[in-house]
Image 1 (cartoon, rainbow, N blue to C red):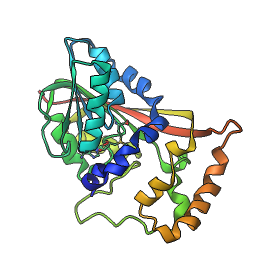
Image 2: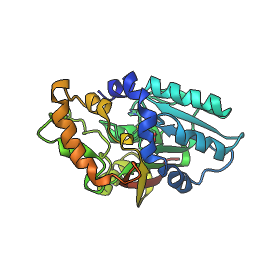
Image 3: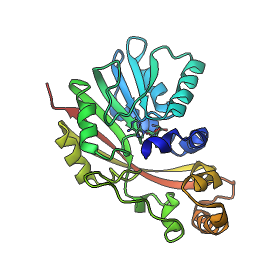
Amino acid sequence: MERRRWNDSSWAALWPKRERLTNLVTPVLLEALALQPGEQVVDLGCGGGVATLRAAELVGRDGAVVGADISAPLAELASRRAAEAGAKNVSFQVVDVQTDRVAGGPFDVAMSQFGVMFFDEPERAFTNIRSQLTAGGRIGFACWQAPDQNPWFFAGSLAGLIPPPPPPEPGKSPTGPFSLCDAGRTRSILEGAGFAGVSFDAREMSMEVPEDAVVDDAQLTFMGVPAEQMGEVRLAVDRHMAQFRLPSGLSRFPIAFQIVTARNRGV
Ligand SMILES: C[S@@+](CC[C@H](N)C(=O)[O-])C[C@H]1O[C@@H](n2cnc3c(N)ncnc32)[C@H](O)[C@@H]1O
């Protein structure tokens, strides 16, 4: 399901619009990671590679960063951007980081900007990721705080208009942007996966971006809104999004995320 969703080429083509919502998160994540020259890094769910490329600058030519993503079209976008930037110490692989190994390990650091919330077996995924880190290697990722702290997420305004996502299969966990928002649960997943020193840094910011960084008709179609219902859904979305609009034509969206850091307990 996640594989199909992220590999949809029309979704991927719109990704540069969407990633504008989170541009200011990258420096916060990188500061928490404190990457050092020469380090080997994997960026999990790297998408279009914006954070991957910043990380590659920080580890310098003696280090390397591998961007790993389940989406072939997004990995292509990232590779194109790396070539345009002339970045030599960065590469991209199409892999499911829940189950697969990323070539080029072991890594000193696993990082992710909103790319680790889509695992239907999160403890298995983080165990797999930890097993590819050096002893004492670190992980640091950005994930969203709760939906009520992130009113830009408009899906609540569609309740009753589009069907809710199907429940996960037995033994699997729900996936989605807020799946790691509960710090207690996320701590227990990471500790169960063999990480120690789990810590959370909750941050709030606001982003002034065009509204289509969050939603447009293509996004609604992708969410399964049928053409005959688009008018009614669009009205509900417009009512919700009006609260963020500024006279400048941009929208100001409050965003609430957390940076989660931990280290590999294994030897
Ligand atoms: C919200 S996007 C974030 C992308 C990018 N890190 C950014 O900040 O723009 C989530 C990314 O995780 C990837 N992803 C989801 N599940 C994955 C999995 N199991 N293995 C690898 N990548 C995955 C998606 O393809 C997508 O690129």
